[in-house]
Amino acid sequence: MSIELGKKIRALRLQKGMTQEELAAKLNMSSQAVSKWENNITLPDIQLLPDLSVILGVTIDELFDLTDDTHLERIGNMIGTKRFISAEDFSYAEQFLLEKLKDNSKKSRCLTLLAQLYVHRSGEYRELAARYAKEALLAAPDSKSNHNALRDAENGVMFDWNFSNSHKLIAYYQKFVQEHPDYWQAYVWLLNYLLADGRCAEARAVLEQLNQLHPGHLYQKYGGMICKEEGNLPEALALWEQMTGLYPEDWMAWSSRGDCMAKLSRYDEAVTYYAASHELQPSPKYMDSFIAIAQIYRIQGHYGKAIGKLQEIIGLLRSEWNITEGETVDFYYREIAGLTGRLS
Image (cartoon, rainbow, N blue to C red; front, side):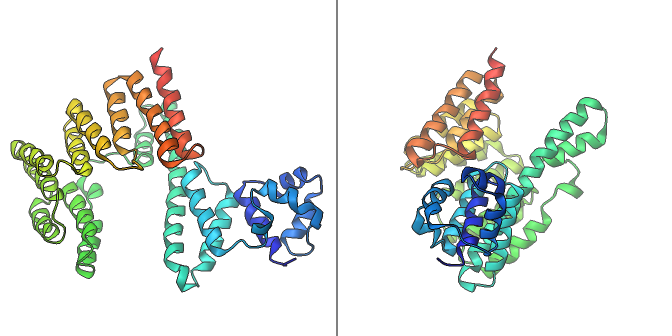
């Protein structure tokens, strides 16, 4: 029996969110025994392996062969499916990923997972910050500090240009497209930030570069967005209509037109275009269009319709992606519960 078994037991226990005491209780033994396994002082009796594998959710073979790729897959699943990551799980994931940065063959994947892990933790803290900021506002509704805290927690709008402009990200992506001129998606990121700052002349130049590299519906989409930013709404609307006319079978063109209408608060039109986008999508279908429609119904006060659309999303997660549990599904159940309270 490999001495690495102790490390694998600890990793699997952390993935299950169990303490040593909880695992020991399930096996009817002491936490000290579990601690000795995990520190490679002793090894579990062979007779315990069947029960241990069931509790940890793996086969006996997997207990002896928890590869680096299995660790990485488990960490990715943890980030994607858990609303809150325990301190133990976070420490396990962080330490494993930092250690594997030394392996050049896994460095890129580990860097991505580290970034996602810290973003997830940031999101957790923001959710907690928003909760406390709202409680603070109940106690002191006229406190500017409390309002600022809620804005920062929820990534809210800040009018002051000095604090809200995207010049750092623009500079980063300007350099990025120079260094990676054939990666067309980078031009889209750059366009988004330029338009957010109203830098339309620069956006037009970047759009021409993008169209040379990647012709398609994005030319009309971003051309219309530039016209809208410049105050020429009729030209923007014409370009967006042209977009779905030129690319009637492209579900992303219809989704983009829905986005543009939603940003104009032309919600009924947006719902029509989002629905068309969803119908055109190949399987497995993404949830984005239905999520947008549910948000529109919520804004309009059509809570029953919003609940219905959220229920459709849960059904699609099951039928299209075979996802039936975890934060991906729980989020929508929480949304439904919140909206149900508004129906009474």
